[in-house]
Image 1 (cartoon, rainbow, N blue to C red):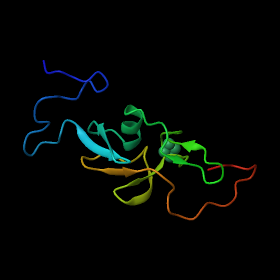
Image 2: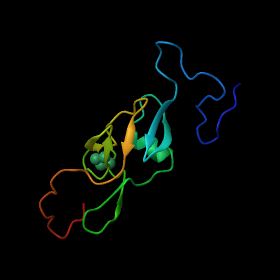
Image 3: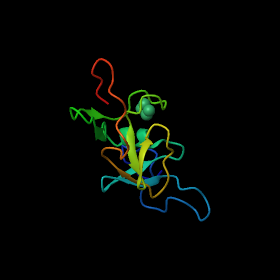
Length: 120
Ligand code: FES
């Protein structure tokens, strides 16, 4: 049995990760310049959580950290830049080999003021 990393028990070490023409067993992405791995079928958000990243943007007004919240595409807390495309929901985007993930504010107009002082 090949050696495995306890943090990533399904990741092979010491050999090629994929055969020619087959999907890689481990997807290799970068987040803020650092390597992150994902499993085929995993979302970007799940891969980041698996890598120990809990937040990847902050609120506009108070700078509060945001990452996964609803996990189903409703709250927009998980917005992230994927391969230069801003405002992507990390909980919905499937991880792909070679993806470049960038934290930070999405480059789009701020939503209307939230009743009750919401802080998105
Ligand atoms: S976590 Fe709510 S939209 Fe992604």
